Amino acid sequence: MIKVRPQLGGMGGSDITAPIPASRLRWQRGLSRALFLLPIIFMMVFFALPLALTVVWSVFERTMFWMKPGFTLFSYENFFFSARLDNFLSSMMHSSVSVVVSFVLGFPIAVFIRRRIPQVAQHRVILLFILPFMVSEIIRIFALRPVLQRTGLVNTVLLELGVITEPITAILYTPMGVIIGEVMSFLPFIVFAGFLAMEAVPKYIFEICDDLGAPRHRVFIDIILPLAAPGIFAGGVFIFVNGLGVALLPNILGGPGAVNAGLIATQAIAALDFPLAMAVSAIMMATLLALLYLGHRLFNLTRILSPIN
Amino acid sequence: MGDDYTRLWTYRLKWLYTLLVVFTLMLPVFYVIYISFNQNGFGARDYVFTFEWYSGIFTDLLLMNALGNTMLLAAITTVLAVPLGLIAAKFYKATGTDRAKLLTVSLLLSPLFVPADILGSALLVFFKNLNIACATAGEWLGVSWFETWFELGYFSALVGLIIYTIPYIFVVILITMGRYKEQQSEAARSCGATAWQAFYQIEFPQIRAGVFSACAFTVILSFNEYTRTSLLKGGYDTITSVLISQMLNEGMSEQSYAMSSLISFIAIAVIGSIIIYTLVHTDRLEREARAKAQPVMSS
Image (cartoon, rainbow over all chains, first blue to last red; front, side, top):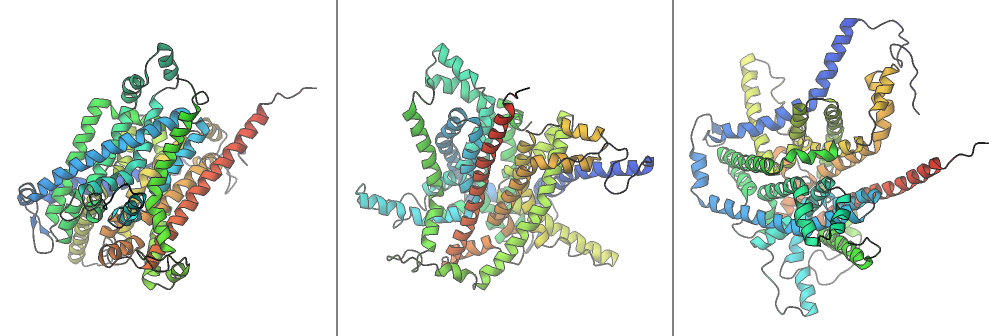
């Protein structure tokens, strides 16, 4: 129950009817202002600062167990002029493929939920997609191994049904396996991002298109895509960057020699080569910032924020 | 175009596709649960249904130790991160300038776009540097009480987890606050309530559902998080690191399968209860709204 008694000076502790001294008010106001800035300060100190410092640390020299302040581009040379660069580029390509696959599989679901399901029920259906996400990512990725391997679920089912005569070996320990793993891990995010992005498409538009006689694919290409583009792009960047960064995916599903940026960084740390790990991190951050800037120029990404305003 | 009822079968087909996708996404989890009930472990030909691995969890010291650490981390993360997200959401709603809003949102949502390993490595190096700085400062000043502040351990793992979960908390709370009318707080303040009273007695009961679901998310997310915690935690074990090390090295013990299935069960139960709660709640709200909208007979 709401208990607000109209009484000067507030209530609860003591029944103060005298005005609060001005100095104490100023102190309280300063404290509350500092309190409200706390999350921002926390994020700046523990998030923005370390990421900015990766650039600084990446030019340090490497010592036996740690690194020495200095300026050397050795780590960058190490990265660019070795097989790591090829691996990095091919992992970027695999990530892009999984973004496209996730989009094709997941965005129609978001459109369907927005358009065909009554308003009150929409959030519940979205919650259904949170379900696989709530189960540990490692369990999901690891559990793909017994499903996709030679003697695994997929192959046994297909063999028993007689669709194939020999087990398919190309779906695990290959780039295909990594792509499957990425799509499985990140499909819910495209659904969320698409769902939020579809907020930008007003419902009356579809009636207008119907009255004007527009065919279905034109509606999709000319109306839905451009309006929902910022959200889709954000979701796509999320999947792309996480596909590049999650070391587990190529580690468990990729087979020999498969790496992505995250795995390179983790291996570098395991080898105590910290400047190299920092160099990889700095390159990843640069890629991410470039992508976000590009998206902002193309789509004006601040429109994504309208659902939560 | 037609609506749902003239093109019923397309509608049903699309529903079927959606449910199929959800089922496929959950398939590996179901398979793990299936394995965990098998007495002969993973990959055996004969399937014998048994609960024995589940009881075996509680005697497995490694798992129990890791479970304790993980639960502690999850609890403290929730206690710290949810208020932080709440404060940030109120701040976001309250600031007027566009620039401040943009800064808040970009800072708070960016952890979503930074992959786990990169953030983990950057924070690792950051903490180690802070460690060195504290150690040298300690020697220099002759005091040692702050030397272990930033060592890799609970604190660093907590920071990593808070940064990981804050975007989700922020978005959930903001969406819940979207339905709250600010005029009620203003009315309360003009009646003489302090800001805390206006928040706690008026706003909080209305956004309580959102805050609690944010808490549930945080607990589940920190339970399941691996990369950041493994890089930042230092010496002790957590559930996820035990699972991964077993996975990569010797193959998972049967108790680990049972443990993962148990965690999955709990996660599914929590989300399922949230879904059912909103189902029941919105039906009740709709009924109340309809009852209130009935014209009252005046005599």
